Image (tube, rainbow over all chains, first blue to last red; front, side, top):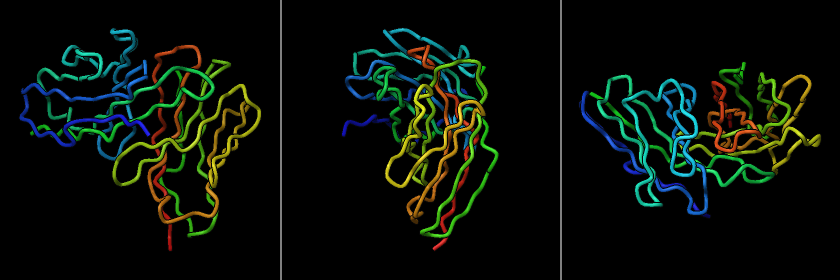
Length: 116
Length: 116
């Protein structure tokens, strides 16, 4: 079964550094998302992306964050200048389209970001 | 804005017994999707079951079933014949049917322990 893949599985970075989290969504999916989960807490929406542009973003997704789909397969989340509070598990997800059987999110395994 | 509430931070069940996890939501929309996701210790988010709001019939997937009460805005998950592998955090999620690229809103999660 096709999967969403994320790399790296764990990223450690120093405060103020830039990080890029990478995702390869399922190939025939059209909608792409980033969510984050601070350890033991709820899953929070960051951003959705469709047709090469941001569709919706949350308050968390401020100017420090950006997303790109540079080559038609990868979907990246960049954090320009990381803060301690950015430490979390970041999940990429994709979905095919809304419809009777095609609305659920398919999640990757996540990237654990640790900012020191 | 939609909200999702899971009132049980933790639940436990004896192996082979049945357990019900609660979820309520608030929305002014008439059509939407509801989901239960499972997050085992491996941290991957796995779809357990989904329900379309326009369908009266409760969804069932093997040992997992839901009790969807649209008027009460309630969407509980029943796990029958619980197995040790069911131990995980369970998240209830809501997604609008009107926004193709819209976010899913998650509850705070319920940690399920299965006792042998």
